[in-house]
Image 1 (cartoon, rainbow, N blue to C red):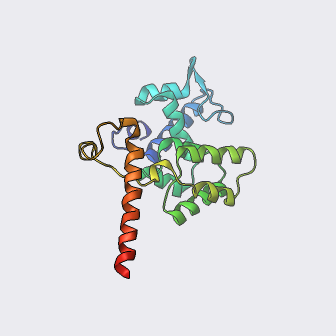
Image 2 (spheres, rainbow, N blue to C red):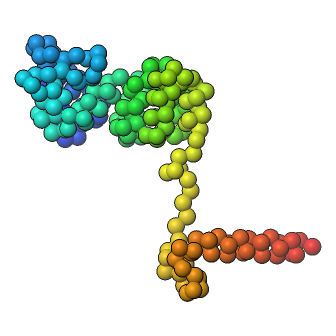
Image 3 (cartoon, rainbow, N blue to C red):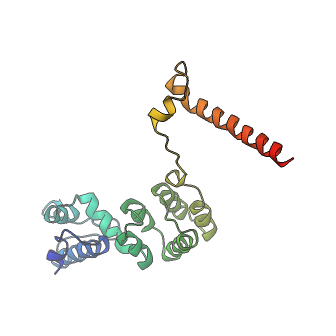
Length: 198
């Protein structure tokens, strides 16, 4: 079951995680050394790390195998978000180092704000947790920050914009020119609205 489960091409991250974990447990029960307290996949078997062996059998790297096994430490709600593709692997791995209460605080913030944490945010949460300073308030503050990928982007086609900008304005100053033009146009519209309201 474990063998065929982690060799399927369309397998959920959670299924792969538990399949790798079961494989690791099976190898350790066969008398192969596997120290789960210091490293999630730190055992050796005939001079090879267990994660390396599992990776060779499955086509994943040793690092990726370790990451999948870390996912088994997530609360079900976070693991579901990983399966749905709403949380990526690396942020999920960082969250897996938090205790259950801290993970539940993250789930509450995800539900409240309808957004998932970035990798950078999860790294900071893990650091706060390691330092014993992660509280629901800290989770809320970190999750409340605007992420670069959440900022509104305005895309302007270069050919359209360039034709409206004088040729003596270098490309490096194009943004400043456009912003000043928009500010000027905005003032013009305000003045016209004031004139029309009289």
